[in-house]
Structures are given as C-alpha cells and as structure tokens.
Image (tube, rainbow, N blue to C red; front, side, top):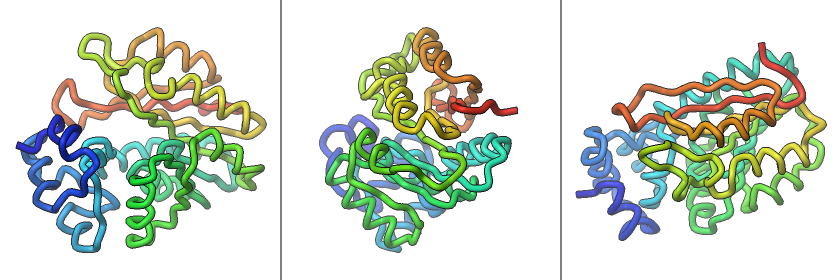
Length: 250
C-alpha cells in the first residue's frame, strides 16, 4: 500500500512511476488523480515528461488547494493598489503553488528558492518542460532574498511554507515555532531585507494552529487574516495565513 508513511521512508528520495503516483492518491485519499500539479492530472503531466520524487508526492500542494490559495492571495493583492507585483516562494519544492499564485495574481515575475539539490534539478526540469515562466534558484531563502537586490515591482508577494518536520501534532495542531525554520524567524529575515517595500505574506498553515505560535507571527504584521480550505477529510485540511507589511489590506 503506497500510503504517506511508505513514501516518507523507502520511496522518499526515489522517482515515482505513474502507477505509484496514482496508487498513493488512491490509497491515501481515494483519488488516483490526487497529485494533480501544473494544471494536469498525473497521467497528463507524466506523459509530458514531468517526474516527481516520493517526498514531493506527499509534500506538494496539489492543484485544487494551490488554486484556492492563489485566488485568495490575488484578492488581497488587488487591494494594495500596486501597478506591478512579484511573487517569491521561499521554499519552492515542486513549484506548483508558485505557479498558481503567479497565474491568479498576474505577477510580472515568479522566483522560487530551493536548497535541496535533487529537488532543485528535478523541478527545474519540470518547469522547463511545462514552460511555466518560473525562475527557480538553488539557494537558501536568506541568500535568495538578499540576492534580489531592489526589485522594480511595487508589491512583493512572499509565500512561506517551510518544512513542518515535527511541528504538527494531533493535539495542538501546527506549531509555527517548530517549523524548519520557525515562521516568525522567516518573517523577521524577510522584513530585515525587504522591509522598505510593500509585502504580502502568504503562509501555508494547518486547520488548527497552536495559538501562541500564531500570535507570535500575527503580532509582527499590521494586518492578517486566516482561512481554512475544506477540501480534504475533516482533520486533514490546510489553511492560509495572510499578512501585510508596509500597508494594510481592506
């Protein structure tokens, strides 16, 4: 059975065959097309030459959720009265969320940072095959942000989804202090580098977030809003924390 525990172990860093991608979706979510990315179902993207690792099948944000995230980010971005925008994904992974944010927000540029060599090489190939118009850079988020210099765009949309690791527990939900790195640290680094710009933070969260860790993040932002997406079974849903820097949505 290709459940998430199998993919996190034996197959974590291996390329998956199409049937394995479909079996994982079927076994874990009752849907062989669960791992739909870049606007395509598994058999469609596989036929185009796109390939993913076992860890990506488990960790990527699939189309249905990424599309909802992109639309909500775009709705808030429109209130910034910005002539142009750029979206930056600090922990890009598959690049699927970055693709959907760029698509819905109409961002002039989309840049993703990915530090893992194996993920970077594979995703860079996928981006090229699909012609997604994403600039993927092999860099940590700290170095990547500093290398941006002074972007010409009026609004920078910053997507924050660091690895959760052991930050998610059944009792208290997602502890944003225990992600790798902690979300508040990511906010601080970003504002240290780009704090003179209009920023829109979009932080992927779980349906339950540990309250103190949530407060430590929202206290850093002049405006924030939390949304949960009811697209999975109860207890398995993700959400989005939106927050502004240098302006307030409304």
